[in-house]
Length: 160
Image (cartoon, rainbow, N blue to C red):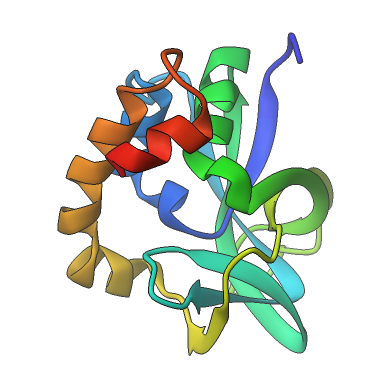
């Protein structure tokens, strides 16, 4: 890549503490700004702790554009996301859906579902995840990210 990457997050990477843990450094040089996608809904993956984006006419999913990710940070995020996702591009609308001037569109990267796991019908919500799942997830993320650079994703999954 050799450049800074802009990434749309609609899931756990919106949480600053988790993002910092995954990137392996403070977020001092990272900009996080509100954005949303249209005709996509974030749904919980069955029996797991994260969402995927699923096409749904009329739906709006709030998220963040994460700017200023170095190659190393992006490689760490790719490792964190594992084989369940692949990097693709998506059109986002800058700003939250409630902002009056939220008509500026931008094409950024995001992690698209590789459809390896079943998806529930339950909408995913960051505050619900933070309230119910975050505290159990952070130690697993820490353990998993210690495997970065030492083993591949399949080998590291044993530490999840």
